[in-house]
Amino acid sequence: LTEETRDSASAPGRAAVWSTIVLLVTYVAVGFAVVAYAGPLFLAENAGEEEFIFALLAGEAMGGWDWVVLLAVSTSALASTQTTIIPASRTALSMARRQALPARFGRVHPRYRTPDVSTWWVAGIAIVWYLVVRQISENALFDSLTALSLLIAFYYALTGIACAVYYRRRLTESVRNLLLIGLGPLVGAGLLIWLLVESVIDMADPANSYSGVSWLGLGPPLVIGIGIALVGVVVMLVWRFRSPAFWSERPGVAGPEPLKDKEA
Image (cartoon, rainbow, N blue to C red; front, side):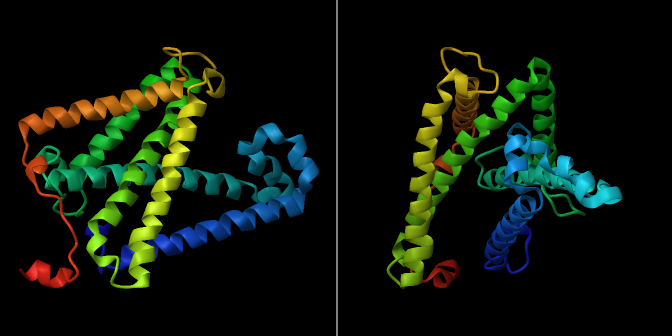
């Protein structure tokens, strides 16, 4: 949301750090509360019901106020849906502005100032995907969600590498720059690449999937992940031949004095 935020040079970064801290505190606090109230024995007895642990405890812990838990879970589901749509629609917006996608994906609503075309496209694709895969089986739907982890790891690993490469001329300006825009992103990228490889090895075994069946000799999540990636490659190649402007650009590098670079 950087392009839609005031003080976009620093506000999104602070928001990301603080939201991570709030999330961490919330998860740890709730984890401690559940163990303190129910005890490890209760959790062990309900080891197969982790997704419903709050529903199991709500009535006993909150009495007639157990509906609050349902409300909290519902709002959480809505927030999760939004966090799925927002990054994809904003990525399409940025790509369209750089001519890596059709220009209509970069359209911004005149009143709401949001990328309405890309948002509706992402929402539509998600709805169609859910309805189609859900008809196959619920396990296939869960396998498709698992497959997304491969794409996310690949995407963010490239982002970490790109960050260090783009700012390479500024890494020697200070220890802070070296750690935050050089070493940090590279370490994160390395960890994600390691997790990606481990996940591919794990998902290759059909027994580790929700469906438990073999697709082309591999686990369904891995096949789905590879299929989605191949579709992306096809779209990229087609658009490269139709509109090669983006691929003819020279790679950008952040200079030691970016403000003067902008004025120039």
